[in-house]
Length: 534
Image (tube, rainbow, N blue to C red; front, side):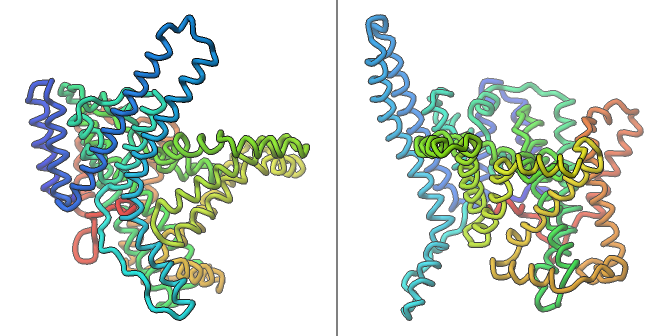
C-alpha cells in the first residue's frame, strides 16, 4: 500500500476513527492491528522477517531483564556485609552472562540483515577473485528481495536490547505491545529509528482526540506530500537524465555538477518529505516521533551536516557504536601509547577520530551493498574524522589570515563550502557504480562550460522550459521554509493565528499545488522513497 495512494488516506482515516472511538485501554491494539495490516499489504512474504526480529529481540530483552534483576538482588542481599571486591566479582559474573545473551540476540538479527542485504555483494566479489585465476563463477546468487523497513526495525530492536542490557529500560513483558513498538506502521517504511524509552510509552498509552493536533498533523502531511511529489519527483526527472545518460548524451562540466547538486536537493525533499508524512500521521494519533532532519543545508561543516541529516541514524551510531569503540580498551591503550610519545593533544583526539572514521565507513555501507557506498563512507569519514584533529591548524590559519569568524560572509562561505563537499560526494551515492562515478568526475572536470547557465542547455534534460523554471521556484520555496524554521518561526502555529479566510486560502493553494503540479504518469514513481531502498 503506497502512502501516496487514496487507499492509504482511507486506511489512515479509518484507523484514526477507530482509534479514537474504542476504549482507551485497547487503543494500542488498534495501532497494532493497523500496523500488521499495513505490513501485510506491503508483502506477505516479508512478514516472517518482521516476526523473527520481534520474537528474538523480545526473548533477548526478557532474558537480559531477568539477569538485571538477579544482579540487583545479589548486590542488595546482605549488601552491608559484602566487600567492594565481592560486589565487583558479582557484577563481572552477571556482565559476562548478559554479554553472551546480548551477543546472541544481536548476532541473530544482524546475520539476517547481512544475508539479505550483503550476501550477494560478498558472493559477487568472491566470484571476481576466483575469475582472476581463470575459474568460472564459483558461487550462485541468492534470490532475496529486501523486506520493507528491514534495516530500520532491526536497528530499532537492537537499540532496545542494548538499552535493556545497560539497564536503561525495563524489558517489555507483553509481546503484543512490543510487536507494536517494532512494527508501528508510519515509521516502518524509512524510520525514524525510535528509542524504546521515548516511543514505547506513547504507543501503549491512550491519546484523546485533539482537533489542533490532528490539524497540525494533516498540515505536516500535506507539506510532506508536496516535498515528495511536487518537488523531489520533479527534480528526479533531470537527475535521472543526467546520471543515467551522461556518457551517451555527452554531458560534461557544470551540467554534471548541477545534476549532483540537484540530486542532493532531490534526496532531501524525498527523505525529509517522507519524514513529514510519517511525523504528521503520528501526530494525528498523539504520538511524537523523533525529528530526523534539522535544515542540513544550513550546516557550516560536514560534521554538522550529518548532525542535521538522518538524525536518528546518527544518534544510533553514536550511542551504540561510536562511544563503545572510543571508550574500549584498545582505544584507551592507543591513547596511553600516544601520550607516552609526548603528544597529549593527539593522544586525546586521535582515538576519537579513528572511532568516528570507522562509524562513517559503516554508515556508507549501511546505505547499500556496493563499493561505491564503501568509498562514499570513506569520503565522508575523512572530512568528519579529521575536522577535530586538524582544528588547531585551522585556527592558526584563520588567525594568520585575520578571518573574522563572526561575519556573515564567513558563515556564508562555510555553508557553501560544506554544500560543495557534500555535493561532490553525491556522485558516489547516486551513480550506477563506482566506475560510473569516476567517469562522471572525469566528465565534470573535462570541460569548462559556464555558458550552460545562460543558454537553453538545461531545458533538454527531461523538463520543458516552464517545468524547469517551476522546479527552480519550488526549490526556492523549499529553502525559504527551511530558513524561516531555522530562524525559529513556527509556521503552523503562525498560520493558526491568521484569519479563517487566509488560512483556508493557504490550505486550498497547497492542495491545488499538489493536484496540479504533482508528478504523475508514466516514468514517475512516487510509490517508493529513496531511503526505502536502504
